[in-house]
Amino acid sequence: MGEVWMGLLKNLFGVSRKPVKHEKSFDIQKVNDLIISVDAADVEVIVHDLPKVEIKFVSYEGGPGLEITKTDNALTIISKKEHKGPTFMFGDIPTCSLKIYVPNDVANFWDITTTSGLIDASNLIAASFRMNAASGKITMSKLTAEKINVTTTSGKIQLKELKADKLKFYANSGIVNIHSANADITGQVGSGSVLLSAIKGEELEVKAGSGKVVLKEVYMKNATVKANSGKIDAENFWAETTIANVGSGKINIRDFRGSIKGNANSGSINISVSDNSGVDLKTGSGNIHVEFHEFELNTLFDIKTGSGDIITNLPMRVEERKKHHVIGKAGNGDHLIRLRTGSGRVVMYTAKSSLLNKGIKIIS
Image 1 (cartoon, one colour):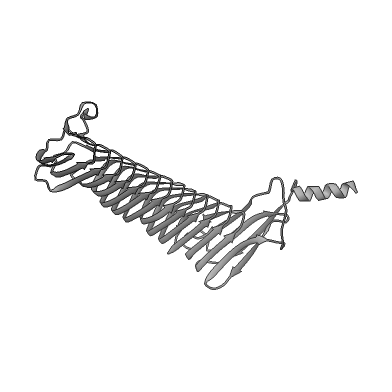
Image 2: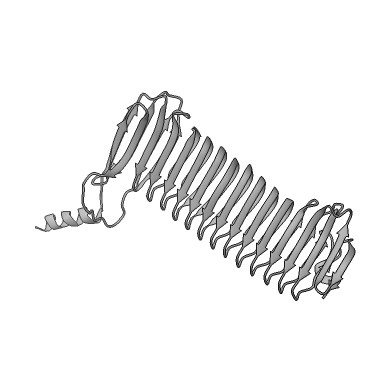
């Protein structure tokens, strides 16, 4: 009786579960759809030089099984429980792994979904990739496609060296890190953060809830960046037109070129410009600081505050001066800098000045 009881406890608490291996090979050079759907398993896609698809799946006794369906146009791989009904397991549950060896252009359309597992894919060419991991991590590199769509709930998205017409991502509370991509990018995070670096494309649209958006060496034709209670932090950011909005957060942009319209309700805006740019910034109760690198100004200034000071050392000709409002010009005034703040102050200065410590006050 004691041995039976100990055996039951052993099975219940999962003290020892033998691995179960599944291996399958298909002579496939090309399919239209390659669909992978697993529960608690890591998925790794590995490119090889053979004209076939090799599948290696490692599970455990009583764990998920493997179901493979092949048609002329599609290959479907599904991992599910071998037994129906509830399963109670305690202790350390083994991690399942699914490795798929494929030619680099084996499918036109990839669709990989996992719940708590990881997804790792690289060196692939396709028309479309769709990757979805609920709480797992998605890692993709050296992919070429028309469309890439990546989604996670609480996991992490890490992408690098991508070429695509359209790249779309969504992370509810996860982290998104994209490095070295040539694509139009649309994405959203809830309480997570977004880091985009070495990015080139035509269109960029990124939204964050309470997280932050960080941009480094981003070159776009049109960009829209929004954060509700988070912040926007950018460096070496060039765009012909930019819209940047935050709620209670801050906007910090270093080395900007192009045209920007920015708004911060209760936060501050700090921006440094490297060339004559169109700048239209507005804050509710925050300050606005604009730093100018060494270049010849060709700018019309229209600066207005509610109750704050306007401070500058720029070589402008003041053309109109009212209480908390100044209009000035440098050069021919071909580029407009329009700054508005409610109870904050406006500071405009050259990069080499010490204006913040002992500046010239125009209007108080």
